[in-house]
Image (cartoon, rainbow, N blue to C red; front, side, top):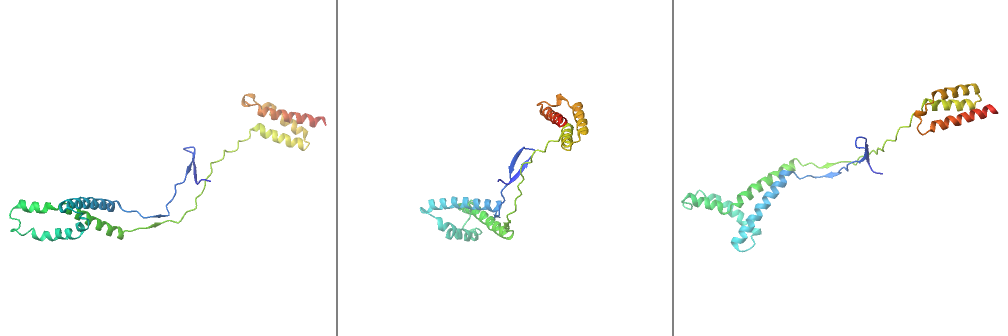
Length: 201
């Protein structure tokens, strides 16, 4: 049997959503930092590999990156960069490291923040209540059907005058316009036959 509930508004059975028992979610800011850092890492590796005519994959993250960091101390030496354009060209030589460093800082910060606010959600499986489609309510008995029941009870108990009075009430109350399939008429006719047989005995 499927688990869910019956929606009267939609007139259909709606399956209950499945609940997760265990979930670890990586924050969006961390995913963005990873993509950003990887993107500029790939660009830097490709540029350095072309420059040095060989794969610069390990050196990009180690020696070349360390040399780029150490070069910041020489930017203040005016003898090395007599003109402003020389300084700008030196800074732009490995421009991808600026973006890589920004992404790396953001990634480290995101990881630290994620660890601090780390949350593991463990939910116990809950018992699901299955609600079946509501059964149609039983049709209410008409006054004539109630009289028929009373009349048959009177016949069974040999109370003939009461059975006669009930039949007269049924006869005066019966409206053929409200009995399209003549189902009620057949019941009345059966009661009349039973009443006649009881009188004949």
